[in-house]
Image 1 (cartoon, rainbow, N blue to C red):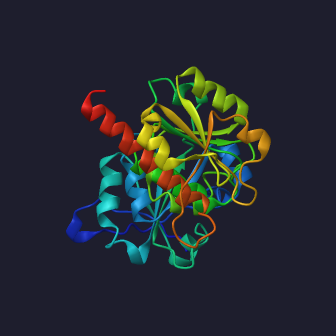
Image 2: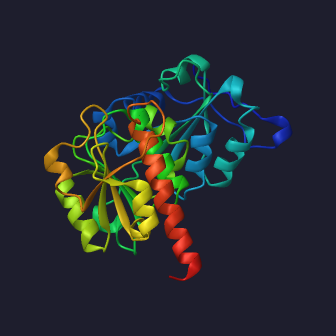
Length: 287
């Protein structure tokens, strides 16, 4: 559904909006596919939370699509877009659903430029906490790890070659807006990533159930308070021996119940919290 007639938002006093052209819609639909995202250098961020965080970043959003029935509900984001110099465009619910992979589309989608940065740039400052995911394939896990890294103040997240596309709609959604908050590095070799982290003074801790050192023991000894990159493995096969050999220490999370193991994102949350809290305590004490 398209129209040349503008729609006025009335009580919100926003500029009249027009329906998207077929060219705009076709270009956005291409971004559902990874190959097209890479070629265009853009991706889709769906839902109020992701769109809000994207709009907070200067020159990140190029187009904002709003489903006409959601216009009043999404008025604050439409207003924020207009204040940032972006002219939102309308779509029918049916057309907007073609940009979404959710069962119930949330009525608003932003076209954003690709975010990932070079490894050297991500580590350019003095990093204290970095997460390195080795061939993580599940988009929900990747997004949740990014969210955890953001929550616990990590300086960067690295996803090695063979990992899921971080601009997959499920990854973007699972990150809950954290995708826009910290440097992201993708497609690098694991050895290269860890070597660069070591060059910046970070110790390499691998999280694995076979670890010969306990997370609690590392925290008690103070080792975990040092600048750290956490190496997290693939969901299915974890970290094979050749990857574990790249770490300074292989660390197990102590389990006190009957569960055999933790999934990737839960293990990442535990390790990142333990490290961040130890680092903050060390900083507060002046040691």
